[in-house]
Image (cartoon, rainbow, N blue to C red; front, top):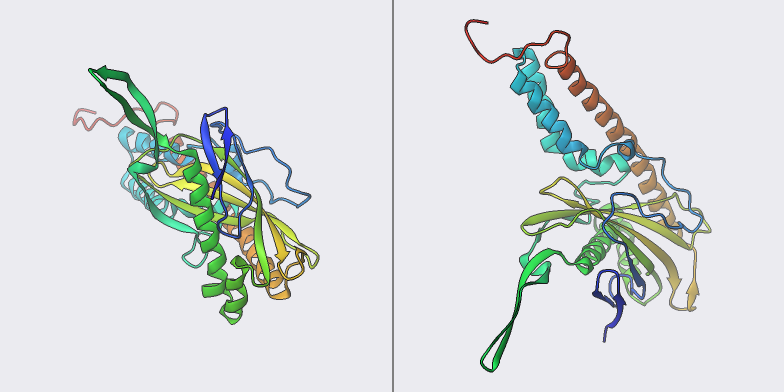
Length: 316
């Protein structure tokens, strides 16, 4: 039976359940915030700061608005083509730009969840019109609020098992059995020691979510625990709805104690970390290029000296 911990700040009853990687972690939840969670990473060396760290969380939608302003002001045909090319790249690759620039691997063989439906029943119920008493009957009417806090943890857990299964199915099928046994108590397993969540904005139905995991540091031969960073993207808003930090322990069920990563795991994790660094560098460069291109459109349209808006009048 699941045990429960009451989080008083948000009056939410949070279950601590055994799930993916035999979870026995205590759930820590922060209030809505736009800043990264400030927590210890157990001595692991973190990634270099992403280029998006200095940008507004809504930078992608703001970029599209800036392009729209240029188009509305009036652009030359070649500039219209450039604007269309930028918008096409954003529409096609926004997940890579938002998550990939932070080192998350977004490809089909790496992602945890892709465009999963947010359903109406995942939102919390809130008292709407109060308590009604008619004769001997009583009704309490509710309205739906934002997606329930616990649901984000379930998104992260579901994505984490898929992240791990990707190693067995796509990345290292030669060790499929060993990877598959990591979420069973047969030998070496991965146990979730703790999970911390930072909520970015109140996501609501209807929406879809995509969830990605990344290794915070490159492991060594002595690594017996590691940190996974998680981003939960709202497809509707095209930005993070929540972030999680998962502390994972490598556990030998036969001896009943922690154990270092097995050699095949160490090799694949190091390879994965290198790909994360590459993705962060490549997509950060793409973002800088897009920002420069949009700024160039601005300085050659509405933000140029003596700029005059093209209203389409034949008398101009």
